[in-house]
Image 1 (cartoon, rainbow, N blue to C red):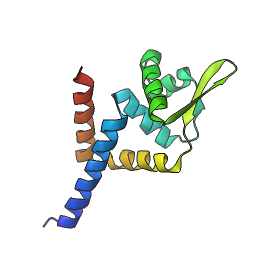
Image 2 (spheres, rainbow, N blue to C red):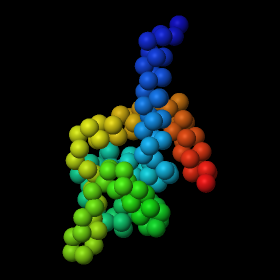
Image 3 (cartoon, rainbow, N blue to C red):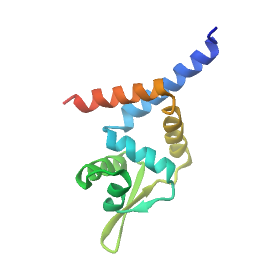
Image 4 (cartoon, helix red, strand yellow):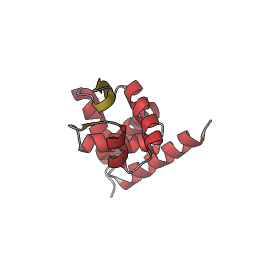
Length: 124
């Protein structure tokens, strides 16, 4: 027998994840970047470092990084004339990212995330 309290909690989590994804994720690369930052909160590096860590093309990663800087997830600072990036040290923002990334471990929520990103990336 299903527990209505568990179902309600799952619906709330799914809603929070969907809202977060809608506002803050514009592509799979941005999603990969957030997952990477969640798992490596002390990371600091340039675009080449991020591209290597994500296994993605530099140009594509740059777009996701710039979007993430705009959204407030990444800090950008020039060091030796080159931009370096790191996960913002904001406990509330990190908590939200953690909540979304951890919720996406559930296959139903992960499928919703994937579907949402696909719809978002295919719209003009």
